[in-house]
Length: 409
Image (cartoon, rainbow, N blue to C red; front, top):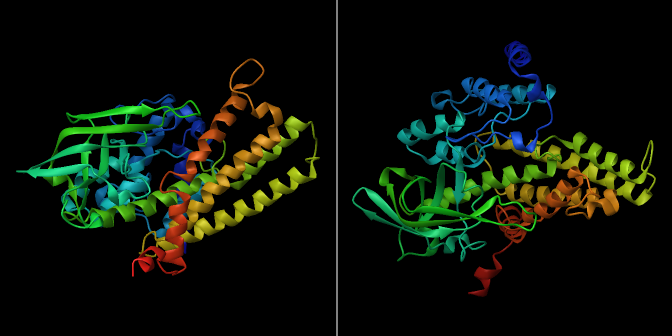
């Protein structure tokens, strides 16, 4: 214990000295750090904070130190997380490389690929996007048609992807491609990495009802990709794809614990926002006068606390060496439903002020909530629809029979 106590003391001292004051305030959306070769830092402290954290490997604290990670033990990682929370430190880096790609590279990539890509993920040098869904392959992802043909030491890729988050701002893509047309669909898929600046790659933002465009259509026209960028074995990409989806679903489940600014601020900030909105817009003082709304917010607090504890338990179980599993579908399902409930309660608390789209009668924050409420509806789709998650839970967690397979017998 003395070793862990020493680590806690040194971590606390380091954070007090190195975490800038502005990085101890709630995250502002325009100051979220995505990294990448074209990274812009609205707040100079954000760049300083990223540099200091990545230098210690603490953007990925439990990843192996030989690849730039922090090399911390599970217990040390928990202490670091607690100390960061204690000072209300912002995440130094928001990255699909950290939340999705990096873990599968550590598990499936060659040593050369790990040395090439993982340090740049830790340091925020590459901004990644995900090439999974296609116009004809969404819930049935294995039906994807984007084709990669090998000519010499290069693949030529043709096809398209859709709902590619931030593809127009990403540096590289981790992409599922079909490399064998003559085998069952799940067994002819490979997992490749390539530069979005490659000739033949183009993107087109998709305008959402909320007014924002985080998603894109992505097109590949005779894109040349080195064969060395194939991760894992040829035609074995579906195994990697499923593993990455487990990491993605665990990440998305955190929406259920997010506050209004988009960071995972925990239940206290979330409920305080709901209670504050209810009292502000209804002229209450001390407690919410509407008993129904008061009960709904109280129940939300209970459910959010239970979800937070369950999520933490799942994280700790995954650190026992087995990684994420089908439980990620349970967390994704409930976390996204919880996030949607939160916005429904916010709108109920705000009353008619939640109905604005533009005009002098509405504050900027009110219009923002309305748009974020619309955006929350996409939680039901991204990372696999809620129906897909229920199927995974039925088969992998509850052990129920596959009705589709039974119907074919």
